[in-house]
Image (cartoon, rainbow, N blue to C red; front, side, top):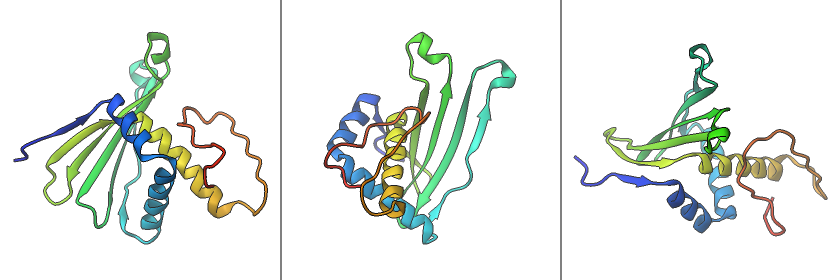
Length: 157
């Protein structure tokens, strides 16, 4: 069995993301998209758990993934709870569990909402890089939810 299990809190994840930087996040998302297009990613459809029938104003989605030839696989368990802000919690909460892809042994868990927000913003940057027409670009975002801000004066898009 494993000698250690890594647990990253929201603060730990924030420090890692800040250290990683926006440019690297965009590169990683672009590489994952490329891997998916080349058939090197295994990503089943999201499984959504709607809690409304139980009288709970919330939902959770499970999103497993593996990108070859990595040694790790993951599952993101993230959801939204509309009553959370009224009790001092964010609407979007979740976790990512990492496991050894060869054995299935869990090796770590981390807070997921910040990673989700950064990935969403980075995906927009990758899409703009490959799909936008050349020249000046004006973008309007309406109802996008929580995003970790990627746009700044020197961000490559």
